[in-house]
Image 1 (cartoon, rainbow, N blue to C red):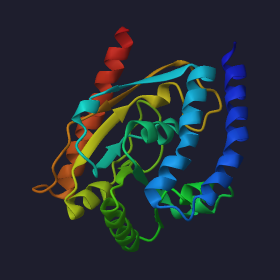
Image 2 (image 1 turned 90 degrees about the vertical axis):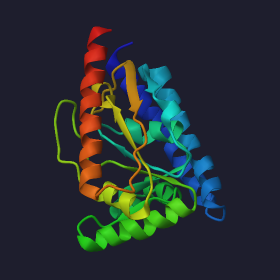
Image 3 (image 1 turned 45 degrees about the vertical axis):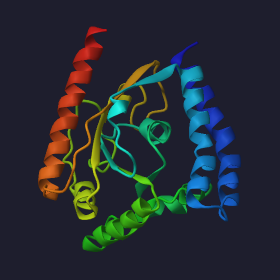
Length: 241
């Protein structure tokens, strides 16, 4: 079966399951946040299962034994929509830092709002940092981990973008350990691309970094160095397989 046909079937599956799950998500409003999370993320499990069965996209996780007890903050590279789904299966219940405007999208945004995201106005400067800190502390206190992509947007494989310091700043201000994560999802599920290519995505989890004696800038630099080096290592290993 061709990549185009597989990708078309996968897109159809997503369209069919998203609307009813959006309505289910809205119906969970009276429930506790962690209960809502576990119900709503069933959607991600279904879509990930379809990505494997229809498109042939599988994944492997290296270093899962390094994960500390939650809550912690995940700082990861960002290549495609795949990791926004897969991380819901790989890591404990989590809150995402998202643009406030995403919550206004009919159905998808309404369901996303039920997952207790940290919604910020990225154009608000220092006010956005206050939003990040206030909501971040509240989510951590509830027991959620927090997932942040320091690059700020999806970046194609072998391209670079400056790592923003906001995630490291939140980790230092809240004294929360950081877990760096590297992956190569963009090799198979490309940025804003319809076609999905079969293969095995590698997700590598680094050792947790305690933030007590670090500045946000030093922490951000350490995370960036580890992720970029690990992505080069993944590429070299995959090239030999």
